Amino acid sequence: MFLPILGSQNQLMKETYSNKLLELNEKTKAYGLILTKEDAKHVIEARTQTLNSYERIELGLNATQKIVELFSASPYVNSKNYVSIITEIQEIFYYFKNETNEKVSDDDLINIIHKYFDMECAGSIQLLKGKMEEYAKKTRMEQMNQELLDEGKDIYER
Amino acid sequence: MKDNKKQEVVVKFKIDKKKLNKYHYTNSLIEKAVHIKLLDTGDLLTIQNQLENCLIDLIMKKTNGESTSLPADETKNLMNSILYSLDMYFESIPNPDDAVYQLKTQKISDLLHKGTDIVSNMYNEVKNFYLYIVKRRLKVPLDCYHTTIDEGIPLFLKHYNVVFSSHIISTTIDYPLAIDDWEVCGVKYMHTYLKHFILETNFCKIFGNEKIEKLLNYFGKKIRMDYKLELLNIFELTYYNAVFMLLAGSKVSDLILTPYSSEIVIKKLEKLNNTEMETAIREVTHLLLTELNITDETTRDYIFECLPNFAARLNNNRDNHSLDSMLVAEIEDKKKEKFSIFQSGKEMNEKTFRKVADTINNIYDAEEKADYIISNITSLYDFLDVLNSDLLYEGEYEVLFSKLSDYELAFLVKYLYYEDMRDKTENLNKIINRNVMYDYEWQTIFHDFLKNLKREKMDDIEKCINEIDYVQLKFN
Image: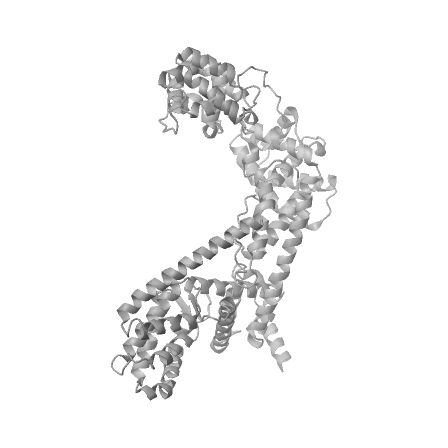
C-alpha cells in the first residue's frame, strides 16, 4: 500500500534530524555540553527505537529538541551523562505520552518531567520513573472521574 | 505549456478506470500511473512528502497543536482518513489520466480539501435520506428494519467524523439488503446503503403495508419462526413473490399465492433448466415492472441486478426439490380452539403473583400443589415463573407435568426447544435423546419426564406442537 514515508524511518530524514540536534550545540555549549555527530545520530536512533517499541509515530523533532534545550540547563546533567540522560528522558516522555492517554500536551509533559527531575528526584532517573508513574495514575483517575461526570451529565440532560 | 502537457498525458497513456481498485482508489491509481510511467520517482517523493504534510496538519488539528506524536494506530487511522477523502475526489474525476495530471500539478492539500467537501456533501445527503426514510418507512413489525432506522443510522450520524475518520462508520447496521457491498467503507457505504434501503422500501410500499405484513406472517408460519426477530430482507421476499404471482397468472397486487397457484408455479419452474430459468425470470420481471408502472431507471437497474441471484436460488432449489421453500402462499389456519391453562395469556401483577407463590410454598401435598397451580395460573409466563422460582421439589415437578394436557406439555416443549424446533428435520424424539445441560432444575426433570413417555403420547404431543403458533409463545 502506498503511504508516505514517515519521518523517523527515512535515512535522509534521520540525517536532517541529527543536524537539527547539532544546531542546538550553539545554545548548550554555555553549559559545557556539546553533542558530537555520533552522539546526535545515537539520540535519533534511540528515538526511532523508542517510538517503534511504544508504537508511536512522530512527525518532526520538536519534543527531542525541547528536551535537549531544557535538560542541558539542569544542574544534574554533565558532559559524562548528557547523552544517556537525553535518551532516557526521551524514552520516559514517549512512554508517559501513552500512559496518560494522550491527554497531556507535549510541552506540559516535558515540563513536568523536568520539574520532577530537577527538584524531587535530584537527577535520579530511577526516582523520576516512580514519580511519573504516580503522576500518570493520578492523571488517568482524573480523566476517568471527568468521563463519569460527563456521562452522568449526559444521562441527566437526556 | 501546462495544457500541452495535459494533452500529451491523455493521448499517450490511458488508465482504465474499471481496472482500478475501487476500495483503494488513490493507491491503485498511483501504482498504475507509476507502472505506465505517468509518474516517476521524483513525483512519487513529492506526493509522499505532501501527504506527510497533510498528516502533520491533521495530527496538529487532532491534538489542538499540543502534540507532534500519536500512537501508531491512531496515526494510521488519520492517514486512512486522508486517503479515503482523496479516493472520493479522484473517483469523481471521470478520466483517471486527468486525476494523475492533477496529482502531478496540484497541491495534495488542495485536492484533499475537494475530497473532504465531497465526503461532507455525501454526509449531508445521508442525513436527508435518513429524514426521508423516517417518514416513509414500512409499517411492518420486523425488528431489524426499525432498529436500523431508529438506532443504527442515528448513531452513524452522531459519530461520523468527516475529517479525522472519514473511512469509519461507528455503528451497527442489522437490516440486510438484497445488494450490499461490505467492502465499501465510510460515508460512501452509508450513502449506498440508504439509497438501496429507500429504493427497496418504495418498491414494497407499492403493495401497501397490510399486504407486506400478511406476506411476512405467512412466511413466518411457513418456516416456523417468529419472523419479527429474524434478519430478513423484505424486498427480496416481495419481489420474488410478485414474480411468482405473475407466473401463476394471478393478480400481482394480491402478492400472496393460493396453495393451488403455488403448485402451478412449482410445476412451471421445475421444467426449466438454468438458462431458461434466468430468461423466464427476466421476462416476468419486465412484465412486473410494467404492471407496477416502475419507470425509474435506478429502481429498474437494481431489480435486474438482483435477478441473477434470484435465478441461482431457484436453480438450486429446483435441484434440491425444494422450490416450495421460496414461495409464500396462504396457509389455512388449522389451529383448533384447544383449551390450555395458558389460554388467557393474562399475566398476574407482582403482588398477586407473590400471593400465589406464598400459597404454593405452603402446600405440602404434591397433588394438591399441582392442582392449585393448574387452577390459578393462566399464562405461560407466570407458569414459567413458578417453575423458575424453586417453589416445587423434585417429585412435585413430575406430578405437575403428569397433570398437564398434551397441548399444555407441547407449549413447554416448544418454549424449551424453540431453537431446535425451527429446523423441521428435528423431531421431539431426536431432541430429547440428546444430553443437554440446563439452567434450571425443572428443565432437567422435564427432559427426563419426556424421555420416559410412551411413544404414542410423544406423537400426540408432537402433533400439538405443530398447532402452536410462535405468537402464542410470545410474552407481553
